[in-house]
Length: 112
Length: 111
Image 1 (tube, helix red, strand yellow):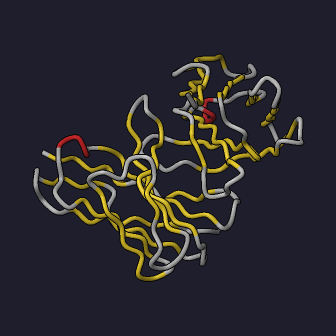
Image 2 (cartoon, each protein chain N blue to C red):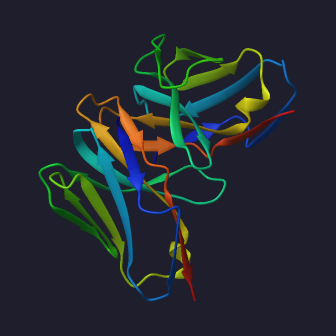
C-alpha cells in the first residue's frame, strides 16, 4: 500500500542544535517533494521544494535532501530557535500534477 | 503575495444542518482544493477543482459536495452535518504543479 511516514509525531530538541526530520514514502514515484510549516490553528506554509533529480536544497538555516533510492527526504534546521517550534509536513507531488500527498507531520519543539 | 481566505475561523453547527464553507483566492490560480485535517491522520483531500465548474473527488468525498461558479471562489458543502465531520477544514490553491497556498483553516464542530 502507499504510505508517507514522518519519523515521529513529536521531536524535542535544545536551542542551538540541529533538528532533523524524516519523511519516508512507499509505493509512490514523486516528481518532487515539498516541506511545509504549520503553526497551531493555522494553515501550512510552504518552505522548500526539491525535485527528484536534486540531491540537496538549502534556504538560510534550512536544508532538504532527497534520496529516491532510499525513498526518503531529510529536513534539517540548523542553529534551531524556539521560534522554529511548529509542525512540519512533507508533501509528495506526483507526476500527475494535481495529485499531492501529505504526511501527517512532525511536531517540533525547540526548548530554550 | 497570494491571499487565500476562508469564510470563518470557527464554526459550531448541529447534526443535520447544512453547512457552507467558502474559500476565496486573489491570485487567479486554476487549481483549488479542500482538505480536512485530523490528529494523526494528516491532510486528507476531499475535493479539488482545476477550473470553473469543474470538480473532482479526492480521497474522502462522502458526505461533502463542492461548487465552483467563479474562478476565485470554491465552496465546500456539508449537506447534512454529522459529528464525524468535526474537523479542521483547509482550503488551498495552486498554479499548475507548483506550491500550494493554504487558507487559515476553519475549525468546524458538529454537536
